[in-house]
Length: 571
Image (cartoon, rainbow, N blue to C red):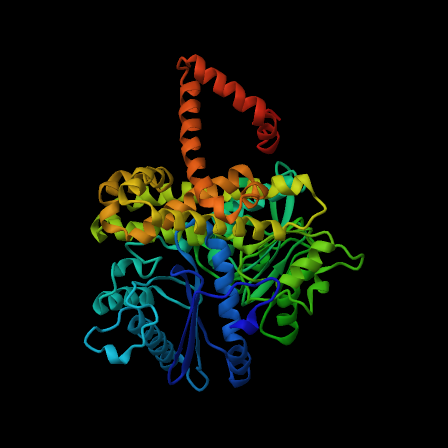
């Protein structure tokens, strides 16, 4: 994969699987030994499109997994992605579905062959891992259905994969379905809100937004629901596009109609055109002209913000980014919050930033989906299916609280950096945050490997404090028994690393040398416990000792002013 590396994507993967079958080819790329990421199925319409997708399949898989690595900074698993390219030309209806199912099953089975080898046939395996356990976790991506998910979990169990219920997330029953609960969109909405306020948009008054991905889509549909929930009619959707059509109305689309389509899981082709205003228009994507209007909506329509929440990777790319600009050279929307993965190429982000566009990168904006999947993996390790289903209503609400907290922590740091230097592009800040957290996680995880089991055990209460409360109340007593030691180390490390970077900033974390970083994080954890103890005593009105009063005074004198500025205290 060396030929894939460049200034933007400069890390060699930890491992790559290539699987080839009769009518499919599959890649799985991961950046850490313990990893998670989506499994997607790509089915080009004809041989020409299949040739195009085949030529870029490894690049797409690498790009998606690299973006996942940046995105997974808040969780124990590193980033990965799997892309299964299926040749379906000449098939339709049930026979086409059969080819897709057979190809997906063959790819999953082949990966299980490698990570759960049959000990009776050692000659069939060249084991570069030297017998080490491999922990790979999938999530559903494009065209992966609930039936596929159930089969994958059952097959992992049949093949002897450890904790098979954790092998695939977003299970229909004992899982947290991303679309049903809008987990990715909840995070996108937090970043959008922070970005709107930071760029001077008053959300207590009407503002405009355009979205790709229709009302029946996961991220786009739930964004519609959340926008209406949070802002009511102040949020005016002036452009919306999906696979079937696009609709545009400078006065804002009718909310009752948009929510009807969302709750009915209906595409824009099912929209009642009578709900459009006098300046509104729907363009059906059933003619070349209609397809062109649908494909250019995100460029043409003016709005305060653009949320790409659906569409193929590199829709805005190195060759066409200038079409996003208006005739006067300004962006058609001065703010982009990337709800979809890789909608913009790195160069397109760079050039649009130069043109004055504030861009919240995908690895930040839509990270809550992967955090939710990680929470589900942990729950699958700790709970039986019956326990999960019993706890699920409360657990989902607790998971959503964790997601919003993670999104808020990063969004606030990102826009603290932005306000300190508004002329600088925002995209590098997102990457710097990911690099700083991942570097800190790796350093602290390496240090934890040198500690005794008792020393690690004394630190693990940090995990309980940061995972969903209902899950920890139910199953903390079995955490050490059921969760692999390597997973515990990375869970503890990523929690502490993200707290360090979100609280203290990127420059603080990156200023510490590689040699000292792990030990520094251990000291930071100890001092954090001391600070929490003082805060609880002050908040509870407890009497402080003379030593404690002096310590509080020193903390306020040395860092209080900067903390008040950075975190908007007393503003």
